[in-house]
Amino acid sequence: MRARKSREPLSRERALAAAIALVDAEGLPALTMRRLAAELGVEAMSLYYHLPGKEGLLDGLVEAVIGEIEAAAGRAEATAAGGDWRTRLRGRFLAARAVMLRHPWAPGLLSSRPTIPAGVYGYYDGIIATLLDGGFSYRIAHRALHAFGSLALGFAQEVFRPAAAGGATDVEAAETELAAMAEALPHLTAMVAAEAHAAEDPTLGWCDSQTEFEFTLDLLFDGLERARE
Amino acid sequence: MRARKSREPLSRERALAAAIALVDAEGLPALTMRRLAAELGVEAMSLYYHLPGKEGLLDGLVEAVIGEIEAAAGRAEATAAGGDWRTRLRGRFLAARAVMLRHPWAPGLLSSRPTIPAGVYGYYDGIIATLLDGGFSYRIAHRALHAFGSLALGFAQEVFRPAAAGGATDVEAAETELAAMAEALPHLTAMVAAEAHAAEDPTLGWCDSQTEFEFTLDLLFDGLERARE
DNA sequence: ATTGGCACCTTACATCGTAAGGTAACCATA
DNA sequence: TATGGTTACCTTACGATGTAAGGTGCCAAT
Image (cartoon, rainbow over all chains, first blue to last red; front, side, top):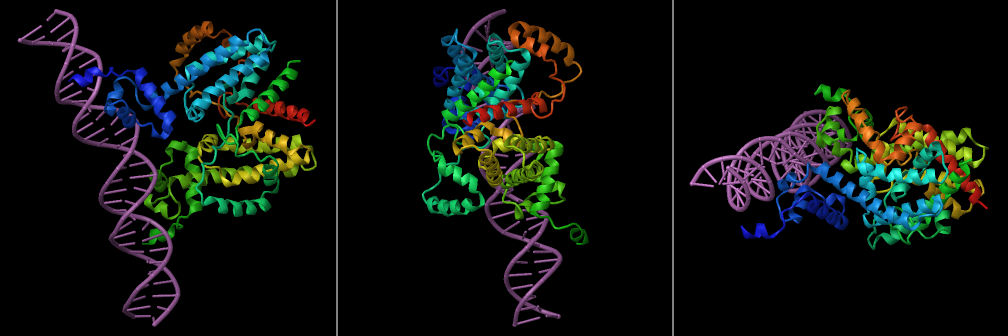
């Protein structure tokens, strides 16, 4: 039939692109084989001619994200060429973070993957190179990698997601709850009161603002600088 | 019937205990309603009289783990009473880590939960108290909490799980693969060669040894000490 | 014209969480 | 002692999911 011919013939790339678009728009749970197939105007089983299965699909997503990160980090390093190790790494990590902000599902997917994506090896190799260039020993470079943890990939390990925006009726309930909380959790409520910016820019994870991200980064960078001996 | 009467009558507590035992033994994916019911000598739907559903069950697991952490951290703080903030927090975090080592599934579950478990508020309140007692401002205490991230709950955000122990035939394949890797990833392979302890104690996450955990902790502690002004 | 393979589809199954409703034992009350 | 309600468990069934097995139409090459 003619209609079949007119649409381009479905491929791993097209499937992955559609999957990313779908997940960007509706979140990871929306990504089912049937749904993705429908998005491509195709039946579910047709996907299996281009992808090895659901796990393979997720692997493809991860691979794509890592690719984006490597590209962005590479550009960042290029513009910071000649700078010291801190600014170069900082550029990499912030570039990675920008990618994660485009794909809020990525941190969760990344950290739930059972196997380590091939692409990250290359990415980590670049980080190690920068550290060595900055005068670090292999030992410290190794420990630095561990210390960076998920920061290197652009997201703070926020243990919990941001609270979903509640309904309108929650307001008074929240107030009484807050009052009850105040006596059970005096220090926390005092801190929230003093640092009342919980509502502003709840971007990626709970209260994970750019500021907090960079603060942690500098804390680690400073510590490493002193650990270099 | 007599047999029904002889076994104790199933409760939320018994269900949760069985769930934890099951997950400790066989991992999170083994935890299905039918399987858990079978473990308790009961049909799946019977669980719904004591639990609000699968999500509620997982919430229960999280709650239990947080409870363990709070208890262990409380004991640690008690023995370190009078010490400075670093040793007190260190005690808390290492106690939490011990809990996580008993329940390797916990980090993944924790960070995949959509809602923030009630128990952590209390736990965080204690951390803030210790920080304030150590002379930190609310601002720095807040940032410290962010900087600690998952360390406060006892696990480094290892982005990827440890590689499963491969079969015997993997050895030669791994060698050729390593050779191929060496030219593509010179710095990483050099680092691995220099730091050849990847195989030893792969406890929680990839290469997340006690040493690395404590190194990061001290990096952050030192940085915070200097950030206090 | 025949053939073979590629790309897509149809059907079907196991497994999952869980809604709806049944049933047996217990327990307080009349 | 008979009765009605509650509790705790079971049976059945449904929709969603990933995917195995095999069918079908088209095209290119022989």
